[in-house]
Structure formats: structure tokens, C-alpha cells
Image (cartoon, rainbow, N blue to C red; front, side, top):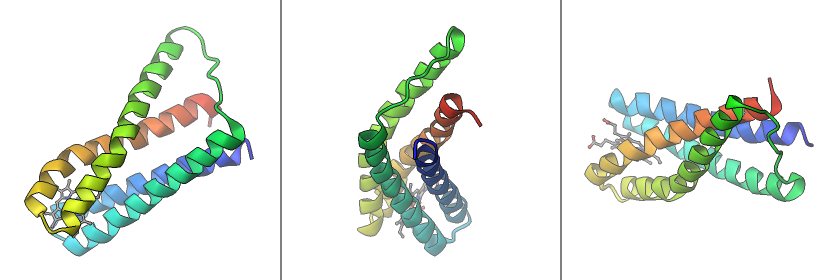
Length: 136
Ligand code: HEM
């Protein structure tokens, strides 16, 4: 469980990020219904990620990083920025979704332009942390 649970967790973020990317390409090419479906899928996988993350935290605790020197500074810079933005992402996604579902598309678009880059940052740094902590 020590090895596959973190992998499942990081895979869930990857699917969420991939769906968000598809959703972004879709909205740029005016395919709103694909955008709608891809973004809801992305949000569901992000929620699943959160459930597995909490489960993992209580079952396995956290793994300490053992790297020394400059990689340690890189690791903690990435980890801290990832954690702060991951916490901010929850409310951002909820507000972005609720504006879309209430058909307030102008306001939806305004906040979505913040939500999406934050989402991608959290996904990419999630993988960087996973690779730095567990190796490939
Ligand atoms: C958290 C989930 C979502 C995210 C992150 C998101 C992201 C985005 C982004 C970044 C844009 C602006 C694209 C641009 O710059 O041109 C946009 C526009 C749009 N989104 Fe979403 N979206 C989400 C969910 C939804 C849902 C569920 C719908 C439902 C139909 C939707 C409908 C639209 C529409 C209609 C636009 C075009 C608005 C306009 O151009 O005035 N979105 N979305």
C-alpha cells in the first residue's frame, strides 16, 4: 500500500489535469458541451484525489524528504507553493463551477482564467513532488 497508494493519488491528479486541458482546448474551439463535460470530469477526479489524499494521510502519514543541499531547497519551495495553491484551488473550482452552472458565463470566464493556471500548476508540481519523493 505504501507504494501504490501515492501512485494512485498522483495518477488521479494527472487525469484531472488532462481533463482540464481537454476542457480548455474545447472552450477555445467553441465546443462548449465538450468543455462542460471535460471540466466536470476534471472536478470529479480532483475530488477523488482529495479523498484518497486524506485517506493516505491517515493510513500512511507523510514521507519525509531526505535529499540534501540545493535539491532540498527546490523540494520545499515546490512543496510549499503546491500546498498553498492546492488549498486555494478548492474554493476557486467551486466558484468557477457554480458561475458556469448558473449561466453567469462572463463572470465564470473571469475567474476561470485564474482557476485554470492554478490547476495546472498544482498538477505539474504534484508530479514533481511525487518523482522527487518516490523516484521513477
Ligand atoms: C471548474 C471547472 C471549469 C473551468 C476551470 C473552466 C474554465 C474556463 C476557461 C478558462 C474559460 C475561458 C476560455 C477563454 O479564455 O476564452 C471558460 C469559458 C467558458 N466556460 Fe468554462 N470552465 C469550467 C466549467 C464550465 C462548465 C461546467 C460550463 C457549463 C456549460 C462552462 C461553460 C463555459 C462557457 C460557456 C465559456 C465561454 C464564456 C465566454 O466566452 O463568455 N465551463 N471556462
